[in-house]
Length: 223
Image (tube, rainbow, N blue to C red; front, side, top):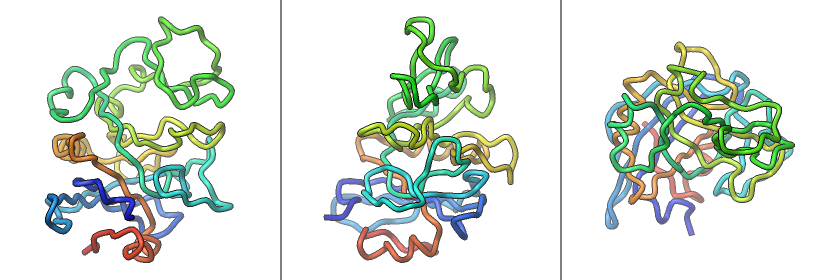
């Protein structure tokens, strides 16, 4: 069975190589009886400062070059899209996805020793057992709108990477700590498109690797 058999929306991020920080985002959709159809124009994105490494998602692919906490690489593979997050001004764009409001105290925990590793908590209500985290409100504009990528979530493995998102870039050409970033107007298009009822997925790979997986994973061709 294809990893994509139950999905009707698909985001594909393809980079030129494992080390590249630049990529293109393709948007696809289909219905129960049709093949994948491309939606709109390609979107420019950036990935990790050191490119991509295999992540932990729906694809069950493991290698010696797996993503690790702090490696400055974005995860490669197939991932669910869990929810959208953002501030009040951007909430209107998330019409068909669960929405997490960015507010005072909200943190994503990136300390592998914490019992809340790779989870969102509100530090106002949770006993602190972490030394580092993403304080979502303090990060400001880049996190005013984002999508939570289902990397290292079931189960959560310590040191395997945490708090992986799609979010607004600070500027084009600047690699991230492990997220996939793009211009605000483009992320608004993506968020407005996504519908949790259509089981949206993300496939993120170097293009050569993507082409190798087209048949086995039943992926759409990229043009």
